[in-house]
Length: 421
Length: 132
Image 1 (tube, helix red, strand yellow):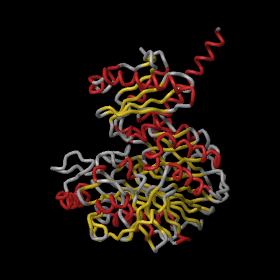
Image 2 (tube, rainbow over the protein chains, first blue to last red):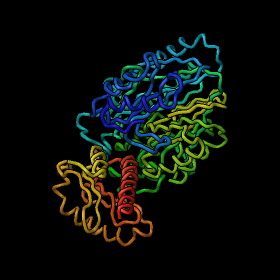
Image 3 (cartoon, rainbow over the protein chains, first blue to last red):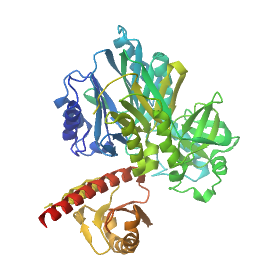
Image 4 (cartoon, chains in turn red, purple):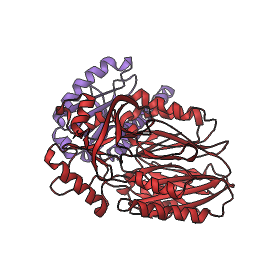
């Protein structure tokens, strides 16, 4: 990892430090950084630094994230990578562009690159790590800088402009759920773990890293066929309050809920949490993170979804709702940290790579160190958890494939003995 | 010219967009403060009132720092002031941030800075004891 401020220096250091633990050149590199290098040299310089050290031809996939935890600590500034060297696997990388405009095309292009490169692989276990460009708050004429819009008459124009902004200017909803569904349709038997790229929770910009270049608004993937079985385990710490609603109108590919049970979505939400309307100020989002909504699928799977914005009568969500049946969830700091124990339970391994929700980092603040201690106890020095605005999980054996939020997910290979930086 | 390693840590914090000002201080004095020119100009405009409020908080810190008081914060106009107390001292790492900043992410780096400062202070104390 690197904590250097200069983009190029950080790029060099992050690879150098990873190489210290490798005895052979890496088979691939997953590369992550916080958004800060945008203003301290830029991401091309960051990648130039990486490639000063990294052997030519090494597959690189990654992006900007809110923060990360490794054995050195918890960080919301810096760069980190996961370099893996292992002989019994085949590797492929894929990229598809303009996910916000056309997630189907982007996912298909990305998936086909992976399939094509791995078609002759003899290893039966398939795993894919993907990173999708995350949501960006669109800047809109007449709306100015907004954190909350109370004027109910602006609800519909906002939703309409939001949809247009996403399609035309590629600023708005990330459409990760759709992208993931198309990816998994093409790559049916792959275990998938992924996340979205983001900045420091301002949702102004985000970048994806693919080999020697950086991109915006793309889906990137690293596909692996390997002799070891992938394991993905999750925990959320969210519980249902028992209050259920039906989405009666939504817009923007399910990212905006207009009405619940035929009434104003915001009014129904406030009734559900028993908050007065006066609580709807710019600080309300420090409270809503404890009361996310959950889409109910097949009466048993709950997909958490954090509230991104209140706009008049409408609720803007961080990712789309996969079901019209939703419930009000709740959590606490203790439940969030206990969820890590659930995800780690039963794992008998010395290596873990995790993707968790940046909202959890935002909620726990410096208490996120509790999670670091749990990871250290389980994996000693061999772990990395990245914090992103949403988490993608596909487990073919369980017929499960969803884009989540507010979860903690850990990935490992059965009986692996990897050492990571 | 910087000589104090703690000043480097504070300079690092100040490079974060939402850290508008920071220092290591106690009730009686500001122990380490980066170049005030690096502070947000709006914070400097309000500095007198922020400083007065801080002094009052340090009374509480002095009273309770020995009993495990970890952090205190207060909101004043459009700003929040975070105090990360350095254990067993009356000193705190103090940061001024916008009231609507993503505090959770900043807290992670505040804690990292506090741990580094504690380490440096420990090393200084060890040197002092050896030289005594």
